[in-house]
Image (tube, rainbow, N blue to C red; front, side, top):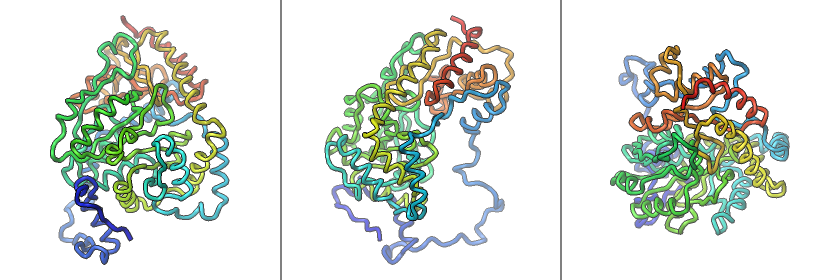
Length: 469
């Protein structure tokens, strides 16, 4: 049984959505007599077109991942060097793979896990993160396991958003945030980050992408329920400084706004990294921290994520997660738990950070060679490169679905077809009115084997004839 109880002074902050109440009541209405099970739609109310899709999925443009991957598959330059989507080009470490193989031989690892996650994994996460939080995390009340970080964030939105509630998202944003917010009826309010003033002419630090805090606070309304933070940031590679996070979080405390902190790249930082939930007890009381086993252990296909936060927030995320997918993949939860338990003995965290930074530096040498400026990342495994100097042939034949998009889509298509390297156009992570900020940039993922990075460099030298100062 799920019991909803909370003190009146924090009712506004932690009250779950009515929709979540209804979901719980629908499955066992005797616990909530105020609600009745949802009734099936009568035949007379069905639409004339029974195959008409819901508005939330109808009329959407082809997504960037489909455009890039389909173009890559059809490129005359094969095999394509895919540095677009952020999946790893190599396996998890042996101790993690061995754990996964072992888990498959264990009976209970092939059956349902508890909806909130396997106890071993929750304990492993609590043990691993307690030192960062400066206190002992309770694995039973402050950690919940989800089917990847993305489903975890959807569960958070499902747990707290009512129709018309607003969520502030900083541009650029990971595109999944938007649909996840809109699914439960939330409204996205965008606040742009501002690029380095000299980003088009010289290499700058990702730290120089800045947020106007006054602009952020001006976007807050009585309907603002949550904000989404992302550090280390995708696609920028920015690690928000302690001062920046404090300024943002203090405003959230002032206005009683939940902070959903996407920290899936939390083991890949090359400058000091601050977790927003550690800044003060008041901030921690508002914060849900999102993590990813896929990002931590090079296994994005495993779909093991988690949220860490105070019990008055986590329990409603868990309740929504239960209704979305019930439970997450059992053997891979077990393997992730063992990964955390053994990581320090293998010096895995420091080695993974060192290796990724080496890949970043190795790959970015090509931009120095070509004279193309880039935003030097502070964390993660993406790099944004400015290609305003690349002159596309005026008579180049772009297909209509690319020709109608901003210049970065054309750059991406051209690189795939003529150079054989796939990269992601970052205007996909902006609203149309702010897409101009990055229309000359492309995002490259460096989480590939070194020989792949070297092949990419060799092919990218083919851009020399198109570069104009």
